[in-house]
Length: 219
Image (cartoon, rainbow, N blue to C red):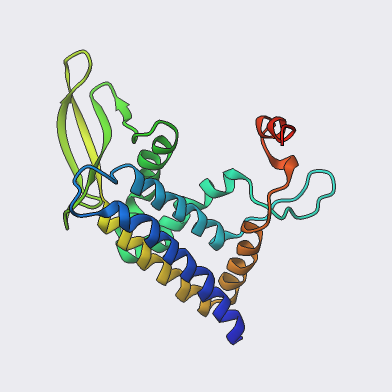
């Protein structure tokens, strides 16, 4: 029992240490220009990873029906929002209310388009974003402003803001909440240990996209 608990603590302690090692240099209070896009990217990557540890989704091979020992990319996306609503909301209730929108506005477009999304609600309104740094306020707040579109017309924007430092600290606290459940409930702890093993297993060649397989032939 002690060994199992120490393993769970070890898995989550490493995640917290890696998270701090990656984020803290980007949060340099003396720099007002860096970290605005890199920090959310890092935070959402860790959230997806933690979500998979929590859920330990199980897939089976199509032909053999055996359980896969690796995770498809879709599992990470599917696990992220539930983790936000489950564990980050314990730190700050607004995550339960805005967790899906937070992920939709910030994560996808930061990964694929380098900057967050603006969502069109209708011809007269948008849902938009704002990133705050070097402040103690403004996290998950909603404000409304008018901004000009390319045609010059003023459009109403509903803005969901994030504060980088608060978001970072909230995620660290949510990992503590996650650890508490893992030590209290055997099902949660077991999923973490099983998922951690699969997450650290080498990915098989057949699971890779075709462009990766082609380039493997050049090695």
